[in-house]
Amino acid sequence: MDLVYNYNLLGEYKIKILNALLSNQNIKNLLSNNVLNTDLMYTQVFPCFINPDLTDKCKTFLMLDGFIAKTNSTIQNMVLTFKYFTHVNLVMYKLDGFHGTRLDILTTLIDAEMTKNNAFGIGRFESGDRQNMNPTTDNKWWGYYLQYTVPDFKKRDES
Image (cartoon, rainbow, N blue to C red):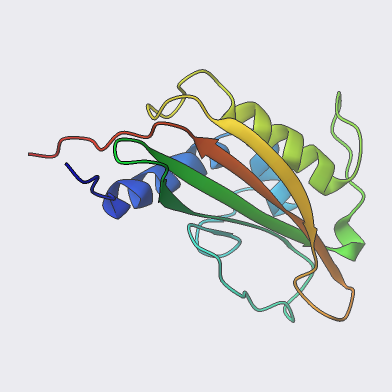
């Protein structure tokens, strides 16, 4: 029997994960630069990789996308990749108990949420590498890709 890729389920999990991250006040404060009552979804946080308008002002962006990869005839993996970047004027950030730059702290906060035991009802996430990225050629923006894999991702019976 061939595996069926369930991209609707992938979309559901992307939204669920982003909402969970945004419910973490430390993440929300970091992304909003401590501006209260900021609606970040679809302004600075996106369930896809887009090219936001970077001419507006200094901000930090977070995006999540993914794919389902067949490893053999009975097993598939869900691979989720975060793309996050900030303006160089926002690199410095302080949060009690955390060290590094704004994006180092964001990496730590994301990883803490993503590696909670079965936090999203999907199974165990395996952390991947964090890779540098520069979303522009003017060197005013700097960021990372961070990847997670859910091995043996099973199709949910939706009947």
